[in-house]
Image (cartoon, rainbow, N blue to C red; front, side):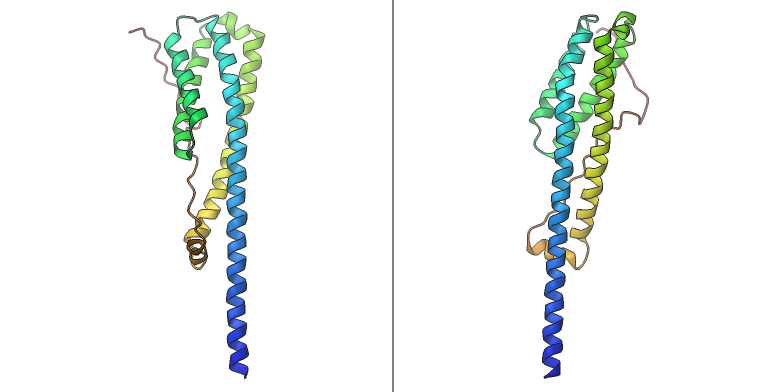
Amino acid sequence: MTPVWIALGAVALVFLYGVFLFNRLVSLRNRVDNGWSQIDVQLRRRYDLIPNLVETVKGYAAHERQLFETIAEARTRGIAASEVGDQAQAENQITRGLRQLLAVAENYPDLKANQNFLALQEELTGTESKIAFARQFYNDQVMRVNTLIQSFPSNLVARLFGFAPREFFDIEDPVRGPVNVDLSQP
């Protein structure tokens, strides 16, 4: 009789541990989804700021038409992106375009003194910080869920219930390197 109880106890422990792993995977998946939602909120805010910033600079630097078009195209791609990798590519293009836009603004002292431009630039800087924070939170959660999905024995539970590894959101960090601006006319 005792070996039967031991076997039932072992089965119950394995079952309870499986339930624990499943609940942990669900919790981490939800944290990843929440992290992505926070990134999305900040990216939408950034997308709303870009047209105002471009219009403000356009008034002073109308001959930078190609730059304005590049930023607008990148913004459109960012809004339409549905996959993490596509979103990251669009964000990298937007970041490069905004760097160039702000570099162009340096050539126009009247623009740099414009209160609307300064307010937009300040709001964009704050939004960039929030994006960086949300990206870090998201990537931390992705690392946790991916580690759990790939580790034994949780990988068995993950495979059984269809949990798949998530993609990191890697974009260019605005402070990673020097800005290279080419304003030469073709």
